[in-house]
Structure formats: structure tokens, C-alpha cells
Image (cartoon, rainbow, N blue to C red; front, side, top):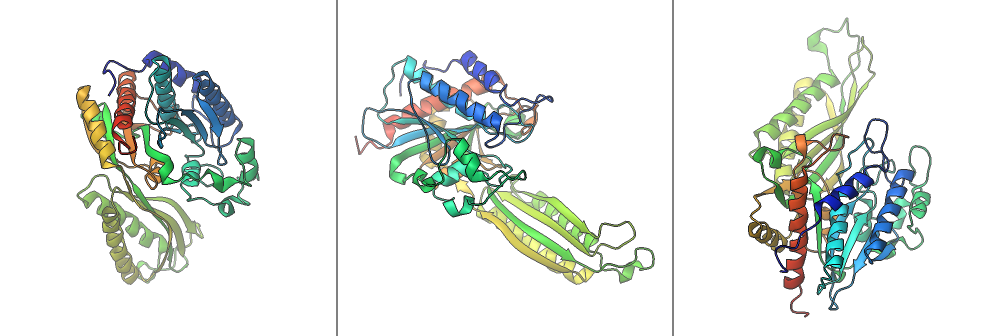
Amino acid sequence: MKGKKLSIHIARLMTDIDELGQIGINALGGLDRTTFSQSELAARNWLKDQLHQVNLIVKTDQAANIWGKRTGQEKLPSIVFGSHLDTVPNGGKYDGALGVLIALEIMRVFEENEIMTRHPLQLVSFSAEEPNPFGLSTFGSRAVTGKLTTEEILNVADPAGTLLTDALQAAGGDLDTFENCVLQPEELSAYLEVHIEQGKRLLNRSVPIGIVTAITGIYRESITVIGEANHAGTTIMEDRKDALTAASELILSLERACLNHPSNEVVGTIGRMNILPNAPNIIPHKVCMTLEIRGKSSVEIQDILAAFTTECLRVTEKRFVHIDRKVLLNQSPASMDSFIIDTMKEIVSNWEYPYYLLGSMAGHDAAHMANITKSGMLFVPSLGGKSHCPDEESRLEDIEKAANTLLHTILMLDQKLDTQRG
């Protein structure tokens, strides 16, 4: 590892955060920088200009991911680090953007100090990480890992009728050669990402650094509870087949199962519900809702799912309703690489930074990159646990510690990885 005193310039990094945080700002103080919007295109141009100033080789791939490359001394696979620039509607200036800006600052430090690495280094800003009007989140990382095909993006449009293919073209992507952006495992040595925690676990423990052990799996299904409509005034209670009261039991059973689980990183949510006929004097005959379960291991998710399935059978018999279920998403958890985790632990110990091992309860691009290369993530505490809102914020000193940890993790991995090829 290079000299321990090598560190990022926190004032310069904060200037970048504030400057980028003005692109897409709305009247409420939040950011409207959704995927391929005019403000997001402006943010892309801002980033590419900064990358050129650091003498990086800048390119936009077929999925409109932005890459800034610094050559290495040896013919080795790249060490890649970054995140994303897009936001949710009325979002904050740290989610995603912090990881890209820390990567930019690290590239500046290497350039200014004339540090040569064995591996090529690449900054990446992935397209469309957040849920977006086109309905395709983690778009860029899924594209480069071969999980998103040309056929899947054809004829996709946002609610305004804008075709995704047209928006992609405007951002510098290319439909005709879309799948040429796919990366092969032999092209990469590692992928690293810094992100705000979006929760309170680090904050509650007064710990500045989170080292992520795994990224949550996400299981979703649509559930339709079918009862029987009838007059709300003339149907006595014991004669009812109320779909809404049956659905309510299911919702509460999901909450109980998660609260009783030994891991507090298992969560379950019914986040969307439609009630039919939704009239004050008619017993509901149908409830359509969406269930989501998240956990850092498949076993945790299956524990909750099994308990919920048992409850569905019980409610069906007790309330004389029918329950239809359809799986919408079954995304497996992604473990972070143990070698990278150990390297991060060594770095934070060298710097005497307190740290905490934790699972990520939100999805990230690193979950997909873990399918093709060693991947690791660092978390920065979120003040108030807030994210996806204008109040999103992290402390200056915590950001500095995370950035220095990433910088020296890159340097140590550069020395340790692919030594047999050297």
C-alpha cells in the first residue's frame, strides 16, 4: 500500500457534491434527476467534463453507462469503482452521486500524485439505477452483466409515451449494438462502490464506516384475495366473505413473521393495494395487493415466505375466500467478496476507523456486478436514516473516512489481486 498519509481533498469533494446537487434541483429543494431526463443528461455532461479534466479515457457504452479509464502498468483486468447519478423524483444529492463523486476525487488524487497502478482503473456511472418511468431499474449494471437484452427494451415507453430506445440514444447509448456492452469476467478484477446507508444502523452505533457483507435479496408477488360482494347493511357478520378483512389478516401476519424473525434485517411490506368495488355500502369482493420480502440470505426470505403461506391457508379456511398468488420477482441475495471485505477491514484498522459489518437492505448495482467479479461496498451513515428525499445528508467527516478507505482499498487490491499474472 502507498503511504498512509495519502488522502482525498474533502473540501474539493464537497464542492463537487454541492455543484452536482444543483443540477435538477426543484422548488422544494429536492432533485428531479430521473433516468434520461433533461436534468440527468445535464449531470452526465457535467461528469464527462470532469473526467476529461483528470485526463481519463472517457467513453459512453451502448447502455449509456459512463466510463473513465486510467491505464495501468501491466496488462491486467480493471479495478472498477463508482455508482450512479440518477435520482428518484424529489430525491437527495447523496444517493448514488456520492459514490461517483468519491470515485472522481480518487482519480484526481492519483493523477495529482502521479501514482501508477498495476491494474487499469475505471470509474463508472451506471445508467438508471433507481426505479424510473421506464420500469427498468439497475438498467446499466444489468446490461453489462448480460441480464438485460435488446428484446427486453424494445417498445418500452414511459407514461408520456417516450420510447426507452429514443431516450437511450439521446444519452449516448445504442440499441443496434446494445449487447456489445456486456463485460466478461476476465475483463474485471474487482468492483467497488460507496453508498449512503439509507438507514440508521451505523448512526445508532456511532460508527462512521459500514462494510457490506451481502446485498439483500428481493422477493415480490402479486396477491389477489377473492371474496363475495354483498350489501353492507343487510348482510350479517357471520354470513360475510369479506376480501378486505381477509387481506388485513395477511398483512398483519407478514408483519408478525418479520418481527419474530431472529434477524432484524428481514423485512416485509405490502406496499400497494386495490379494493373492489371500493364503495362505502358494499362488502369488498376483491383485494389486489403486492407483497415484498427482503433478506440478506435466501434462507431468511424463505422463512418469512413459509410463514406467510401457512397463514394464507388458514385465512382461506377461516374466511371462505380464495387467494391467488403470482411471483413477480425472485432476486437472490448477493454476497460481497470475502477477500475484499478482509481488505477493507485491514484498511479501516490501519486508519483506526471504527466499522460495522452489515447487510444492505436496499438493492444496488454491486449486486449484479457480483455475478461477474469480486465486489465490495462501503456504507456512509445517513443522518436521521433519511434517503430518497431532499433531507438526505451525511456528515463531512464520515464521507472523508469512507473516501479514504476506498482509496486505500484500491491501492491494496492493486498490489494483491492478480499477482500470478504479474
